[in-house]
Image 1 (cartoon, rainbow, N blue to C red):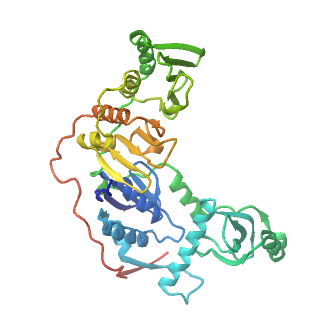
Image 2 (tube, rainbow, N blue to C red):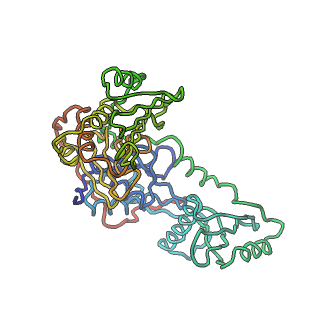
Image 3 (cartoon, helix red, strand yellow):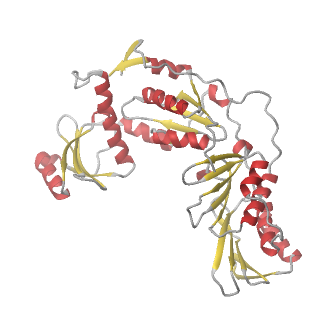
Length: 431
């Protein structure tokens, strides 16, 4: 499939509680592609439609401007909140910067290096063994997971932290650190600075709200979800109405259903309650004692019509080959988005998403409710080998769960707010 157009809107605004951090609100059919680009630029997801940029060098407005310009080149629609635009247009300097001979660009280079070290520690790529205070600032010794001369001595905090020495051997790096700082050495990393703690809280705490100028673009709605007891009722009806299924309950919490053909086996977990709990496991085999052809898992909360569609297909596969699932979703006005590793189809409002990862084995196809797989209300995962007919019928059943889309009364996206070519120093500010 060719790459889908960059049909998404990205709105940038200052974070309401952590100045000058930035919140990016992403909406539109290809919002996941925009979020992928933003992640590469340092933004981290904080909600289904929001990402945040929080930097140790306090340069969020500058890097947001760069990100907006890049997204515009890719064809995305971007908007910058006026308060953030003022920050972008305002140059500022650090109070009492310890290297006054550095130009503004050199100060940014120092801060960018400190940001890389901060990210390496936060993401687990750099492990800190020991730290100390040398009388002026914090120093530390740590090791990268890979690389040449991967054992390092660090000097400084926040936007001034730098690598000062590299070693080939971990024991040599630690011994030299202990020789330099002797009784001041303490195990593990140093306590977080106030700024580091703020960044950690911002990225892992409650999601920030979208700016007022961004909320008008958000059209997310709740996906359909099975109510309490619906799965149990459907299981009982399965054995009452479909005589070709035989059940037995080896454990109180599990019911197993076997088809008369002895090629299909279904397990139901009566204890599944949470949205991530697997309630149903389905497997098909190439004979009564043959190899497993494919399997699927279905979490609690999955709408019953989707489960019924799967079991009906296994009970009586269609004689005529169905359409390709992509054709079914295209006809239902779902929006495609292609990436090197996967193809995603999103329903209008992103209430349901159908995703295929052509190189995966365990989770070759995933159907889930909601915009974000990490916070999905329910999930169906199918392995490689699942029949195309089943996938097409499942896609059709998912489309039937939603009302038919209605034409929008006007343009969905606001006009592009073009950023200035440069970043003029119209005003000065100290931090």
